[in-house]
Image 1 (cartoon, rainbow, N blue to C red):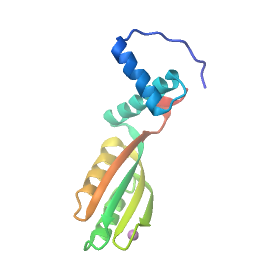
Image 2 (image 1 turned 90 degrees about the vertical axis):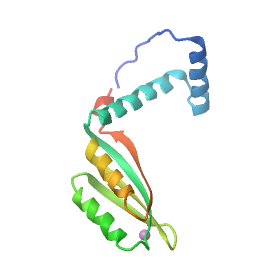
Image 3 (image 1 turned 90 degrees about the horizontal axis):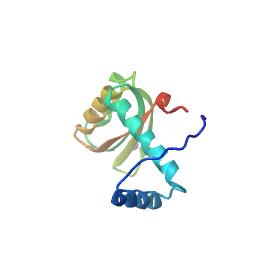
Image 4 (image 1 turned 30 degrees about the vertical axis):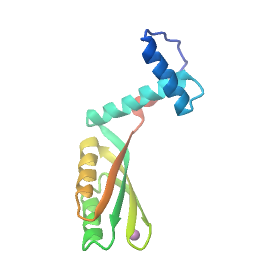
Length: 139
Ligand code: NI
């Protein structure tokens, strides 16, 4: 970890009040750590906007009674074998399955996979949680 430097900046009072409220509501011990994490989150978003190699998880809920769906979902994951790292499948109840798919690859490829999974009939929810390889976040 690199040394910390002190920074000062100007901000409108109402915006500063909102920042303090966000810090408090988020449970952060101090403003500095909140701002550092906000910057890191923005840097991760930028790696996705620039279509760089990224990491993420897709969480998908689906009806396992839907004819042919399990096979189709597996086919799609095989088609993206370069991006799919691991899949965890849970039989939620008699009807529903949830899968968490960990992915690494070009941001656009990952988004396409998530969108395609979501569009299948019988998929009730599919959403992407973005992360990065961490290269831009190392101190
Ligand atoms: Ni299942």
